[in-house]
Structure formats: structure tokens, C-alpha cells
Image (cartoon, rainbow, N blue to C red; front, side, top):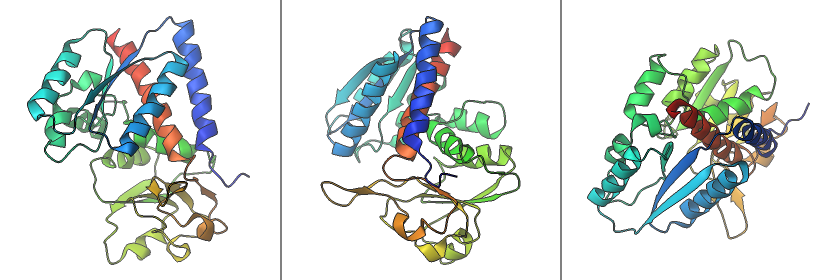
Amino acid sequence: MDKIIDGKALAAEIQQDLTVEIKSNDLNPSLAVILIGSDPASRLYVNLKKKACEKIGIEFHEYLMPENITEAQVLETIDFLNKDELTDAILIQLPLPEQLDTDIIIKAIDPKKDVDGFHPENIKKLLAGESDFIPGLALGIWKLIESTQENLNNKSAVIVAKGDVFFQPLTKVLADKNIKAQLVDPKNPELKKYTSAADILIVAIGQPFFIKEDMVKDQAIVIDVGTNKVDENHIVGDVDYTAVFEKVSHITPVPGGVGPMTVAMLLYNTVQLHKNNK
């Protein structure tokens, strides 16, 4: 049994399947990405998405905007993309500069083109069981957990994260698989009590090596969403990988775990939106 959950390999399989689907069904999916400002990490993520799209046959259009752009100008671009029949999917690269209201900008996207699945209408439908369109991050995390091939029925999951906007869909996805999940704030004074009892531990707080060996249950599945640059050459997760490795049954590495899967699920959702629009 391989303890390391290889997100890179899993993502490559998904991308290969999408390549075949696009070619064999003569599909022409199109993704528009809006990048505001010059944040190096955001620029890197957009370039990764661009390369992945081009590799499998998704048209990629970037809209690069200066840091000091006004909200009205951003909304004008979104309005154009909403009306453009050749644009299937729209993505706003987060985080946004301080002068922009993230909620207002996400709400401006046509829900039928919201590839991240963050529009309140899409979240509401998913949580009510009225939609099977799952946001890429939640879907990617589920695919990684599923790939362990463990019996997950009646398992418990704890999601350590600062906000519930991105993780409400994941809680719903896990509940649908008969996994009881709860979201716990990293500042909770009883955090260790929750994490050390979880069969599945998902961590996304942006703090290197935050989760120590004594905070993890024996034979737990650990999904590390954190991406922290500690120097010019090293990126690490929120989990102290080396310390917990022997204790867990499965764990995602950083890099090479959640990151590649998030990109693969973006491509998957772009193709789904294209088929819906057709």
C-alpha cells in the first residue's frame, strides 16, 4: 500500500481522460481567467492553469488587470464575458487587491459560467442537493481521499480552515459519502481534541508545519491543502509531513498533492460547463 497520495499522477490520469473526451466528441471548451495585480503566487497559478488548458485542448483567455483597477472596470469585463457565447467558464484568480469586494465580484459572474462554483446560487443549489456541480477544490480533495481505496463508510473528518465559504461544499460532498465532517477554526482552544480524533484530517490555513505528530490520529488520512513558501527553493504544507508520516495511513505531499488536483478539476469543470452550454 502506497502511503503517499500522488496528486500529480492522479491529475495526469484525469487530464488524459479529458483530452480523449474533447477530441472524440469534437468539443471546444473555453476558459477565461481574470488576474488582477502582480502577486507572484497568483501569476504562477494562472500560468499552470494556462499550460494545462493548452495541453488538453481547452481555449484559454487571460484578462490581466492592474493592481489599482476599479471595481466598476472589473464588473464591466465580467459582464462582457457573461454575454460572450464563446466563453464557457469564468475564473477570478484570488485573492483580490484590498479595494475590491470579493463577494460582489464573484456574485457578478453568471452562475452558469462560474467554474469555481463559488457563486452563492451555485453553493445554495449544491447544499440543497439540487446540483451535482462540485467546486474544483472540494472535488479534488474528494478524489484524493477516494484514491486511498480505504473503506470510508461512517468515518469522521475534520476540516481545519479559517473560513467556511470554500469548505461548505466539501462538507456536503463528504456527507453524501456517509462521512461526518465538521469545520474547526485553527484558533479553537480545543483544536487538538478534534484533530486527534479525526479519521480524515483536511488542513488549509496557510501556516507551515502547523499540524504536529501529536495532533493526528493513528492511521488517519491526511489531506494538506496548505502551500507555504519558506524560502526561494522550498514550498511546504500546513502539516509537519516528516513528523506525521509514520503515524498516518495516507498523506498528500506538498507540492504534488492537492495543487495538481485542483488544476485538473478546473479543467474537468470547464468541460462540464461547455457541455451544459452546448
